[in-house]
Image (cartoon, rainbow, N blue to C red; front, side):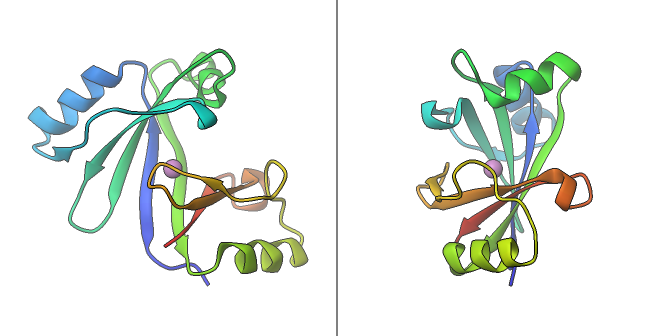
Length: 134
Ligand code: CO
Protein backbone atom coordinates (compact mmCIF):
# COMPACT_ATOMS: atom_id res chain seq x y z
CA UNK A 1 0.00 0.00 0.00
CA UNK A 2 2.66 2.57 0.93
CA UNK A 3 4.86 3.79 -1.89
CA UNK A 4 7.83 6.14 -1.97
CA UNK A 5 9.33 7.83 1.08
CA UNK A 6 8.15 11.37 0.34
CA UNK A 7 10.13 13.07 3.11
CA UNK A 8 11.72 12.85 6.53
CA UNK A 9 10.72 15.74 8.81
CA UNK A 10 13.15 17.28 11.29
CA UNK A 11 12.13 19.83 13.91
CA UNK A 12 14.71 22.60 14.19
CA UNK A 13 15.08 25.38 16.80
CA UNK A 14 16.48 27.87 14.24
CA UNK A 15 15.01 27.57 10.75
CA UNK A 16 17.44 30.01 9.09
CA UNK A 17 20.44 28.25 10.62
CA UNK A 18 19.15 24.80 9.63
CA UNK A 19 18.44 26.03 6.09
CA UNK A 20 21.96 27.43 5.82
CA UNK A 21 23.40 24.17 7.18
CA UNK A 22 21.66 22.10 4.49
CA UNK A 23 22.28 24.64 1.71
CA UNK A 24 25.85 25.76 2.44
CA UNK A 25 27.47 23.00 4.49
CA UNK A 26 25.73 19.98 2.96
CA UNK A 27 25.35 21.58 -0.48
CA UNK A 28 21.67 20.73 -0.95
CA UNK A 29 18.92 22.53 -2.83
CA UNK A 30 16.51 24.20 -0.39
CA UNK A 31 13.11 25.87 -0.82
CA UNK A 32 11.96 29.21 0.53
CA UNK A 33 10.24 29.04 3.95
CA UNK A 34 6.55 28.12 3.65
CA UNK A 35 4.23 29.08 6.54
CA UNK A 36 1.45 26.55 7.13
CA UNK A 37 -0.78 28.13 9.81
CA UNK A 38 -3.27 25.25 9.65
CA UNK A 39 -0.51 22.88 10.74
CA UNK A 40 1.21 25.30 13.15
CA UNK A 41 4.56 25.09 11.38
CA UNK A 42 6.82 26.85 8.94
CA UNK A 43 8.58 24.43 6.60
CA UNK A 44 11.64 24.49 4.41
CA UNK A 45 12.10 21.61 1.99
CA UNK A 46 15.50 20.21 1.22
CA UNK A 47 15.35 18.47 -2.16
CA UNK A 48 17.46 15.33 -2.53
CA UNK A 49 17.64 13.10 -5.60
CA UNK A 50 15.55 10.34 -4.04
CA UNK A 51 13.48 12.08 -1.35
CA UNK A 52 13.09 15.32 0.61
CA UNK A 53 13.92 16.55 4.09
CA UNK A 54 11.26 18.78 5.66
CA UNK A 55 12.67 21.24 8.18
CA UNK A 56 9.92 22.17 10.66
CA UNK A 57 9.75 25.16 12.96
CA UNK A 58 6.84 26.13 15.27
CA UNK A 59 4.36 28.73 13.98
CA UNK A 60 1.71 30.28 16.22
CA UNK A 61 0.54 29.69 19.77
CA UNK A 62 -0.25 25.97 19.97
CA UNK A 63 2.11 24.52 17.43
CA UNK A 64 2.37 20.73 17.64
CA UNK A 65 6.14 20.99 17.23
CA UNK A 66 6.63 23.50 20.09
CA UNK A 67 6.23 20.63 22.59
CA UNK A 68 8.79 18.64 20.65
CA UNK A 69 11.34 21.44 21.02
CA UNK A 70 10.48 21.81 24.71
CA UNK A 71 11.63 18.23 25.33
CA UNK A 72 14.32 18.15 22.59
CA UNK A 73 15.76 21.69 22.40
CA UNK A 74 18.34 20.71 19.76
CA UNK A 75 15.57 19.40 17.50
CA UNK A 76 15.33 15.91 15.99
CA UNK A 77 13.48 13.61 13.63
CA UNK A 78 9.73 14.23 13.89
CA UNK A 79 7.99 12.07 11.29
CA UNK A 80 8.32 10.02 8.12
CA UNK A 81 6.00 10.63 5.16
CA UNK A 82 4.99 7.78 2.88
CA UNK A 83 3.09 8.22 -0.35
CA UNK A 84 -0.20 6.42 -0.94
CA UNK A 85 -2.39 6.40 -4.04
CA UNK A 86 -5.75 6.76 -2.29
CA UNK A 87 -5.55 8.33 1.16
CA UNK A 88 -9.13 7.53 2.20
CA UNK A 89 -8.76 3.89 1.16
CA UNK A 90 -5.47 3.76 3.11
CA UNK A 91 -7.14 5.31 6.17
CA UNK A 92 -10.02 2.82 6.07
CA UNK A 93 -7.66 -0.12 5.70
CA UNK A 94 -5.49 1.06 8.60
CA UNK A 95 -8.48 1.70 10.86
CA UNK A 96 -9.83 -1.76 10.07
CA UNK A 97 -6.44 -3.10 11.18
CA UNK A 98 -6.77 -1.23 14.49
CA UNK A 99 -4.41 1.67 13.78
CA UNK A 100 -5.24 5.10 15.15
CA UNK A 101 -5.55 8.00 12.71
CA UNK A 102 -4.90 11.36 14.38
CA UNK A 103 -7.40 14.21 14.42
CA UNK A 104 -10.86 13.67 12.98
CA UNK A 105 -9.55 11.30 10.32
CA UNK A 106 -10.35 13.64 7.46
CA UNK A 107 -7.33 14.37 5.24
CA UNK A 108 -6.01 17.93 5.42
CA UNK A 109 -3.99 19.79 2.84
CA UNK A 110 -0.27 19.35 3.52
CA UNK A 111 2.85 21.24 2.55
CA UNK A 112 2.65 20.15 -1.10
CA UNK A 113 -1.01 21.03 -1.55
CA UNK A 114 -1.95 17.35 -1.36
CA UNK A 115 -4.15 15.53 1.18
CA UNK A 116 -2.32 14.21 4.26
CA UNK A 117 -3.12 12.22 7.40
CA UNK A 118 -1.05 11.33 10.47
CA UNK A 119 -0.94 7.96 12.22
CA UNK A 120 -0.36 7.39 15.93
CA UNK A 121 3.31 6.67 16.69
CA UNK A 122 2.40 4.00 19.26
CA UNK A 123 0.90 1.91 16.47
CA UNK A 124 3.98 2.26 14.21
CA UNK A 125 7.16 1.36 16.10
CA UNK A 126 7.30 4.67 17.95
CA UNK A 127 7.37 6.69 14.73
CA UNK A 128 4.88 9.38 13.76
CA UNK A 129 3.82 8.62 10.19
CA UNK A 130 2.36 11.02 7.67
CA UNK A 131 0.55 9.64 4.63
CA UNK A 132 0.38 11.84 1.55
CA UNK A 133 -1.77 11.12 -1.47
CA UNK A 134 0.66 11.28 -4.37
CO1 CO B 1 5.58 16.11 6.66
